[in-house]
Length: 284
Image (cartoon, rainbow, N blue to C red):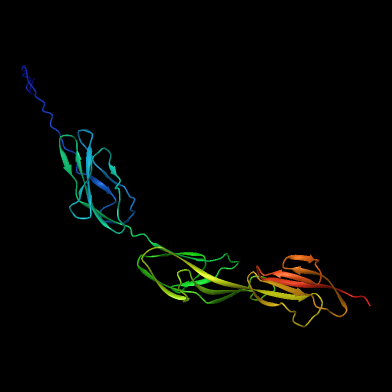
């Protein structure tokens, strides 16, 4: 050894190194974040932690619905833990204790609140319809079928018109009538209030009638028997009228043209029907 004046000296020195373990850092960066709300019930808990000595860390996880959470997992090797079951709309407290095998470091108490999932009101028809009946939920006009998302324990006002008419097919004019009968739970009122404490499916029962419009290619001013409203599935027998100076030729039924079946035709009322009797003018 030497000093600034050039003087020097030599000798032997003994250095003792003491290996002192440094404990893990305080766990930080929690997920869910502190006081986070609307947390899914299938969430995983995660955190971060460091060890200045580079030691491998194990964790004990504490979780509960009181500020003093209980041990739910010990010796967790990673920085994540998935709870077995979390309740909806519950506040949870949790903490992590980190260990490097010699020392432990306890983290702070964190908290989060799980989500209260929405409930769904599903409204459908008891039969397949060619039109979409309307229903009102809290004064909002909607079409059946529908899925309406509501908050849990919300009361919904549901209204449905007892008679609804639709213009489905040319010529212009209403040709479908849908009449409300009842709900599948036995309620017959078209107005009801529903407490949405759980998801619910309602089926509306309807009766349906279709309009049979009958026309002729030749001028004919009288009403032809069979024209009018008929129940869904009914069969209607229609006879082409005698028109002076004309000979009956064939029928047009909706988009099917030139049906040759004689002057009498049987119509199945599975939808609105526009029926035309076609004639040929008789030459003098």
